[in-house]
Each structure stands twice: as structure tokens, then as C-alpha cells.
Image (tube, rainbow, N blue to C red; front, top):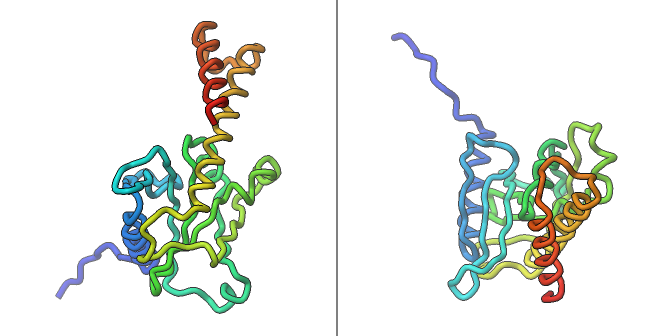
Amino acid sequence: MKIEKLPTYSNGKKQGNNAADILKKNLGKFGLVNVVDESIDLGIDMKVQVIENNKPVPLFFNVQCKGKDELAEDNWQEGYISVPIKISTVNFWRQQNDITILFVVDNETECCYWCNPFSQIETKVQNIQKQDTVSIRVPLNEYIDSSCDTCPNELVKCILLYMVKQLECVREYIDNFNEGISLAYKLDVETSVYLLKKINESAHDI
């Protein structure tokens, strides 16, 4: 009997798919989860909008999901999981309007450990550009599981802080435009003034 060659469903792929299913289920307890087409694998696996009292609220975050079939004893001793992330992926995250949260899913316990990667690399982004990867530590004391029916307060805090930083980035861009520094996109003066006005109004409302 002739044996035909067939594609292989690797353990790594199986592990990743199981983790994504678990994470989507847990995030779905307090958010609207949109899975990103895996053919566009640039470092974001899902996009989530937070739900409160069964209604969507204007809090959004992106998700990068990593899966493990079990956590090593060393992880528990050290209190974190170390995850290597490509610098190109980090740079892609930095371009996003919404924060990207890194999740590591324990496929055995279905606990989804998470961290805000920017809190660890924000001050050294320029220094790591010559590297291929950077190591992100995901603490074992921050996690969601099937019992979580609301978005964790710490996660909401991360989302809000990132939103403020994005506001600051937009303002800096407009200031650079006014000084003739940024020429990639040419805005007319009326649009520039309008944007600055809206930013100031938003800042006063915070």
C-alpha cells in the first residue's frame, strides 16, 4: 500500500490552538473577542472590547497568546514565565492605537497569565533595537480563568494609562507638525488647530 505524504499537525501548533481556545473562552466572560486571521501573523492574535453589565464600553486591548501544556517547577519558584518576543513584534505593538497584552495560557489548568509588556520595555525600546528578541516576564500572580466575569482592575488600569500615552503621542505629533519637523503627512493649518483644540478639551475632561 502506497503511503501518501500528508501535512503534520505539530505539537507546537496543537498547543497554540488549545491555548487560543481557552483564552478566547475566558476573555469572552467580560469582553467581545475578535480573533485575528492567523494568516496575518504579525504579533496580535485577538482584539477585545470590554463589556460591563452586558454592554460594551470604550475600553479596547489587543492580545498576543502563548501556550504551554504545563508550567515548569522553575516558573513557580521564580514567580514568573519568561517569554522571548521578537523586536519586530514589539515595534508593531507600539504602532497600535490600543495596548497589547501578553498572555501565557497553561493548557492543563486553563489559567491565563498576563502582563503589560510595555511596563518592562518602555524605557529601553531604543536600546534593544539591535537585538533579535527581548525577554518579557509574565508574573504568575496576575491571571484570569473561568471564574473571572469582569475585567481585572489592573488590566483596566493598563488600558487607561496606554490611552493617555497615546493622547500625548498625538499631541507631540501635532506639535512637531507645527514646527515643521514631521512631513510624512501634510495637514492643513485648520485641521492641525482643530486637533490641538480637541486634545486640550479631552485633557480638561479627564
